[in-house]
Length: 596
Image (cartoon, rainbow, N blue to C red; front, top):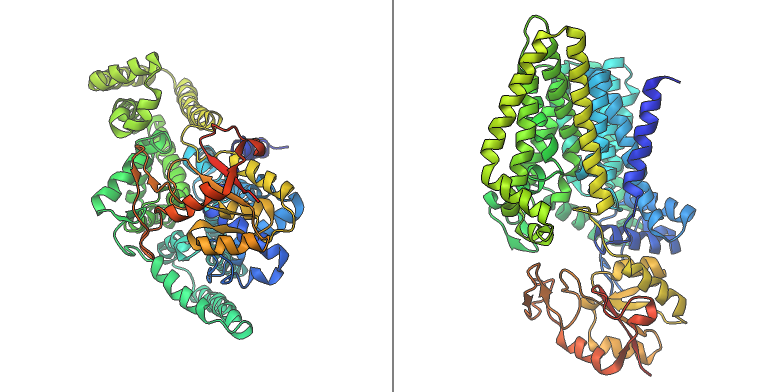
């Protein structure tokens, strides 16, 4: 077996392990939405096409935007693995593993095996990518589809095989059937690539035909609900989702419905992308690769990754600043960083030029790490407060915050002195030492990513409590029509119980009393942690702990107080939280049962 194959096998294995270790239960967010839709589609297969439940008081009851390529992978996974977190996570894991393989194959073809080696490691161990592919969000699937379409286009033009143009087009269709059109943004990076490739007219004709075929299929599919279910709202949803996918939709940026100015959006991205280990460790190599690629912009392979990088930044900085939506940029991060590393290394080892770019890259990277640590208490005051009890860490932050400029100057002096030493030794030793430095850098990235996952720092992790509640309800429910009434986790509990769990937001006291009288309902779930707008009586709780008891403003406020429902619960139910297996003091949920 070739060393290359062994390397890939080991890399893909670790890609899998880091994403499945201590895997998430459902978060109550988008992954729970997809699990809910799939759960109901398993009972009624046609729901894969017609995902609409207008008669049920549950989240996404009027979900008219059909996304079969979101539901189908989960459908298959649940049928094989059952109703558990691994079934929901497995499609994302598979997409992530295949994405690492695609990065390697694409970069090897474009820039050689050394650059592919570095790029695939940086991608596989990107803490940013790991963080949002440890659950069933769509980021893993979208990244995979974009990379696969890119791979097919490259093969079509470089190998002269036009059938791959059609393969790429159908991959784009799967992308569009996975989410709204934001997922296709990286595909636009292929436009400058195609232009610079100066492809033949025949291939342009195939691109046009393939495009027309998949667009026709897409719109024909959108007509199915109109023809078979007499529902035109799918077409209306298409228009609204298309507008939603455009940059600058609504306010320029928003968090929890609050308008955010452009400069605040940019600041948010800077803090969460380059001022943390999530991207900060490769930030300097990315800059090196970016500016070197700009010099080579007339070459299609460099134009591709520059475009991928720039398009996503411009697009998302003008959209809603949910940081996880930036995950599709990670391939560009990894490739540009690998270009920066290999080019600076090659120029340093060049006998004729002897550029100092590589030592400068190492010194700058170390300096940036020092700067991130020094600024951490100011950039993330809440996170700093939570770890400031450790004296060693507190002392480190204090020292670097006060003396980071001096430390950075010392780093540059030491690296310059070491580079001068390297120039005096023979080229073979230079290559060995430089290669060892790159390997150490890659191992640091691997170690940081692994530590973040194992320690749970900054990784999108939600408590297992919701699964414990779901299991209890499923075991103790009789013939009730509704599993429960719950807040933001009503979607999660539909998956765990395979019965509809109503949403607090969509029901009132009269509805509760009617269901109780008809023996359709007996369990009620309140969730307490982070913020709670779907739980009556609590209002919104921000991260500082301040409670906003804003009254409901229908259609505008989605996290608000519902005291009449809360009072009904307190007067008509008993707290059975300890019976579920959760402690009475758990900070996540309270579970109530109707007292007959």
